[in-house]
Length: 106
Length: 205
Image (cartoon, rainbow over all chains, first blue to last red; front, side, top):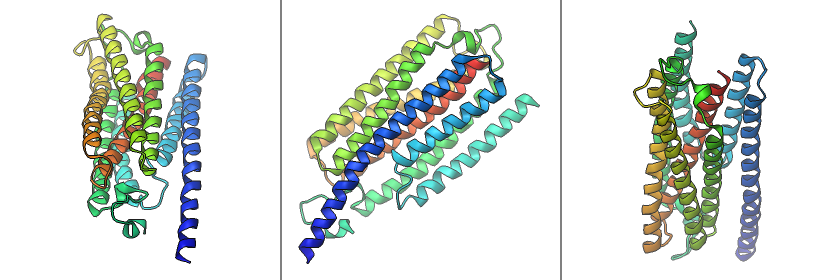
């Protein structure tokens, strides 16, 4: 019984590992794609500047979410503290950046 | 579960979380990364405030060399992927694979730093020196701080490689390598924002 349990556990570990490798490569291709889109957007020119700014920030945030979720394992269980730590930092950053933008455009 | 049931002399699947010390290190490191987020955030805010003040120096859209930036981005992104592979090798208890992928990460990181040094030198020759304008000072502070983090990471991984060679993979060395991998991904995440905010937005105007 115990032996049987162990073998099922083993095969579970194996499948997650194989899926793991694939999803990291997909995250990599996705990151390259997002970088390329951002790059092409700027090189294309002749588009509304405010629209380009917003789209660039959105593309960067999406890429960072993908990398943090998969490469830094933040989507995995037991990462509540990690999310709290990074979010606390992001709140401060958000405040600083909003103040900087407010100051320069006011 | 696996951390309690593992046989003596045999590593659990995730050796970095096998001991309380290892788990505490990871938790503490996340707190550090939260602080690092604030550090880079304030530098970004300073850059956003000052980037319009170019005085007699070159403007962002005539300065930035996109061929160099594209190469640097590709190098750092790939090194982030190879550090993921090193963690997967560690979870397979494949020490050779772990050391091999860390070496690839080290080489890619060093290449990134080389490109960045060349880039800074190139800009300095165009009159974009540290004290040329508020734009140049905030640019070098932000991008240079990121480069300093890369340089620190390279020294760190060299020490880890020596330790892995000497002591092998165990529940003491595994958390250290895991923390390096977290740190390296964080450096890549910061670069995504530098690439967007400094270079791409600089080109748009």
